[in-house]
Length: 291
Image (cartoon, rainbow, N blue to C red; front, side, top):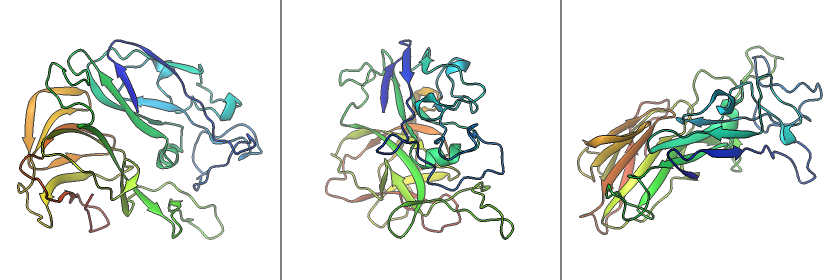
């Protein structure tokens, strides 16, 4: 997670270090669909060329040359570069209000695979009001009562390795991995499956990010096995993708789509000793939906 300040520009050199113990470039461990246009290295010996990547700061005010354009990809050590690659060190102006931003891979044709493999994270932008400190002018909860939460769905093999489905259209043809939609059958929160957090009976700032490929979430909080709306802590939304709202918006449920962020306040006062469940009932191919 990056933590930066509004109007304080940041320079980042994103390093593609997808190599083995001997420094040799690694092939992609997920199924590549080479039948479509993608960030294919020029070396005909691919996959020895390595996995191409390029980083996009999602929601950031950024110059085009630093925006992680899909054809600005590069392989380990910048050995090979895409046709719109411009420079190794990217510049982020950040001339905007405080907001919950995030970064993710953006390489042409394999963004879904690289993000699925883990190339994504938070980029929290502060300003003079939302300082992140305990004495911030807005009175917002600060660490450890401010918790970034990224929700992603995944599939796994029997031995716990990441799995991405693929299927050939015709017998004997390559197995494509481009799917109209992807819905995993496990939900990960900050990289953990079905995690638990111990909270104090007080207000927390929960900064949600939907980092899933296709899945929407419609979330609410309930005590124990209750499925009823309004029986658990209310969710008060204080911010969206672009920053803070003018006033909190009380919600009985929170709907968030892929790539969207929701900055919220949740009070756990009055729920001492109880087990609360963050639930999801957005429609998907899988009927179960607790996060």
